[in-house]
Image 1 (spheres, rainbow, N blue to C red):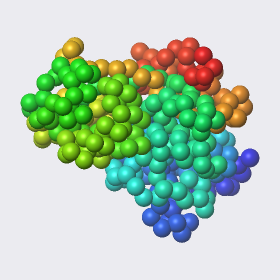
Image 2: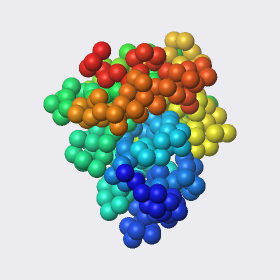
Image 3: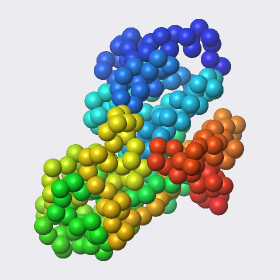
Length: 327
């Protein structure tokens, strides 16, 4: 168990934890708020804590849940490391996930799941997609906790139609319908894989489209700058992230770009569950169930939330906390 002395010491480290420990420029995200400023309740995770990485889509809602959980559960804390650096907003770089343990920052659901699979110092992954059915992911439990919507964003002064269907988007993202600046998140993105599945496009087709110059698949997901100021650009975008922007609550993406499904009922729109992913062997253990299980902290917060909604994500009722393969 954590000693009182050690608990006080790590809080005192604050945002300077990496420097104090001689770990160079690595950043411990639980020391920071979503806007990159120092969190007065910040800490460097230890062996008692649950460390997670992964999805950009749900990083902020998991951050919020972690802070609430940690305020009342100081023994086993949630430490969620964002897909991008909270201070700079940029992907890449290293993170210090426990004393003396540095890893490359995972950016996206796939990267977080891979890290969970390969690194025993990581306890969970954030994911905006379900399991892909691979042998590696069969050893993991995908635990849904909320629902999100997915459509596409365009510039506020865009020439892109607001009623594009899945079939239209398939044509655009396979170069069959020219005249668009089609954007797609980075390769490890769960939003990317879910979006492509919904419009019926394979990664092989995207590779061909990228080579032909009609798709840019290198943009950071849920960054409205990908289309802002470009009247021909479009990109898939989370409905929850569109209405909520914790780093700058007064300036959500809704103030910058347009979500097509929000203005046109004919626009492509899909719904998806979002997940916390843990090892199958951890399911049923008190440490994990008290956080991720159906009677755990996270499901309780959605059940109690006004409108059953937290930061744009909608609760899923009795399905919350029950792994996909158990339903």
